[in-house]
Length: 619
Image 1 (cartoon, one colour):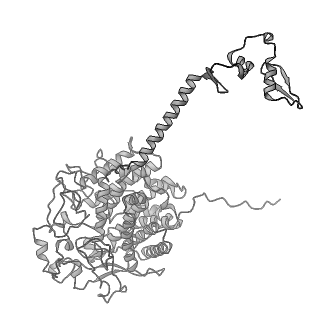
Image 2 (cartoon, rainbow, N blue to C red):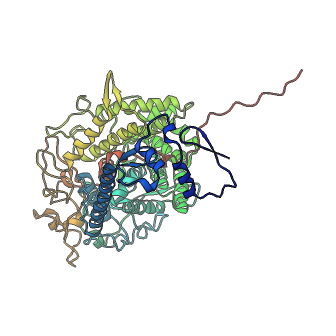
Image 3 (cartoon, helix red, strand yellow):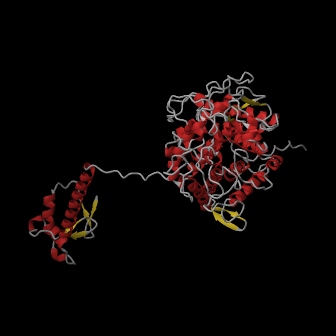
């Protein structure tokens, strides 16, 4: 066995050598130092001399890989030890001294307004109210709805929502309201959760869909009627019989009969109700039994809509006076799109993208109201909804032709919202006139703000920086800015410095056209005409209808806070649903964006259909 001599030669070590280390070190002293051909450095000399001859302290420290000055080594080690001691002391102080947590930044105006806007739905509830309804001046009402009309098939019509400042329950705008709320939850559930409102908004939707399920035979596959409306409001021709418009009463005090309007040919209503139930089924997909119940009801309604063609408000019926439907083709596209998302059944997509259906719905022609989403016309909403499919799944043939048309039309609609284009006028204060100066403008404005913010988020999620309006390219930020300016106007950034959402800010309408809010809860029952004094008084409402968005200003930014003028001061379900949708889209952190996948949870993977196998070869 050989070791390596540090001076270059082999050093033989006998295994049998019993010499100790001390003996070997003494033997090394006998070496002829003069024979070394080169001078030795201090380290080598000390090694040869052995410990007995080392009298001075070492000036250097051998760290193996390097040799350093002893002073530097001591200073370095000392510095490190002191630094470690100080670091430990500081850590101990930080750990033991009570820390002051930084407060989170306050919620933005859109989140604050969202909390209030959702409360409006609590105030509009009909039926037996839950204990946590949180509207002190409301109580149980409409507990005889359906039972008081012997001519109708559906006897239990308790529940649902009152439409506006009266006590009528209109299925048509109520269904649209539930669809809009469901759409906003599907896209922005994370923002609702961040605001602490997810459970609340889902409860609001369920209150509406539970009632819609009562208005037809939801267990059947085929139906022949729908209870379309509870209560009537026709006061024309000097009618003085008690009804929901002639009388000014708290809903809790109503004692007159409330007729039920049934329809047997109502494609628009049935398809809108199908859209409401289908969209809600996606919201409640984690509740499998309820979600399936909603899907079954939606299928039944859509079949009825296609089998029994006709408008629900035809023939001068009571609904025609208040919520007259112009056609049912847009509801076919809208309902078909929602049923496709809810079921994944491609037959609904084939229907929603059928060229003839799109033509009848007005997809290929303009008109003054083109691109305006409302409780009557859902085409603009359906086009945005189906553009989503093209952006994220791109199903291709045979849907691409109409989907690309809808996508292009959506781009044109978004262009029409921008101030540089003249499709719609604006007030001097900046409010877009989507209804061309007619009364009650805000319900249309909030829907447009929602579509603009949503489409902006679609493009961002698809890594698309913007879109073209003719030769000009516009950033997605421009769309979001449009939505913000319109909602900011509604929240108080307008010439009157007035918020049109009750309870938001310091200056808002105090004379809202609303029976329940205008009559005090003082244990006095005011009869049909007895409540007129509360309608006609100039005093503010005794009850605050928190979150209600009133009808809005006129085309000159003017507004009269007068209870008897419903064109200024009456709120509606559909208006507030659009407001909630727009607020949640703008609220919180923009980086949160949309939920890209939940809406597609029932849609199967889209792969091209493989060709059939070749026929067996024959010689």
